[in-house]
Amino acid sequence: MALIDIYDLELLENEAEQIVLTELERQLQYLPEYVCTCRECVLDITALALNSIKPLYRVHLMGKIFTQMAMDESAYAESVRKAVSEAIEKVHKNPFHPPQKEEVSTGHFKQKKMSKR
Image 1 (cartoon, rainbow, N blue to C red):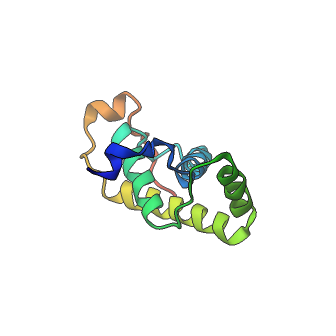
Image 2 (tube, rainbow, N blue to C red):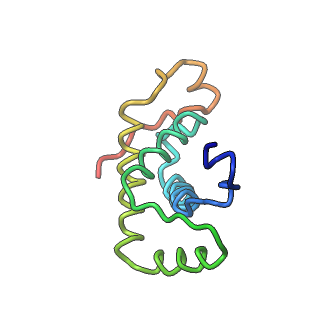
Image 3 (cartoon, helix red, strand yellow):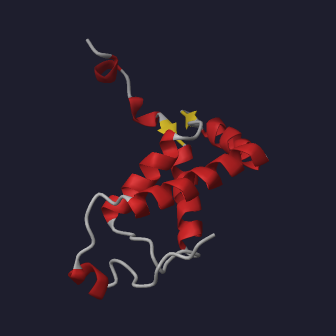
């Protein structure tokens, strides 16, 4: 019998997911002119960022406290910030879907060009 059938593995959570989503939301506030925020792009950005940072799995509430301690470390926080920023840029340059005229007119894509850094 498989472990997944024996144990309640739904208690296992990667706290890095919430940390990345929080950072993505923060960064999108400063980049709304050109970044597509459709479901596919947000999921792609999140997945790319999560794949490039250290995961923070927890099972119990104590793990959440450990996660907060990890975020207080400037090195981990910086790795999350950088991973999200790079993922935004990568997905923006190579979105899963091509831009459509309807998307531009409905605000799916903003019309302003990306500013150079």
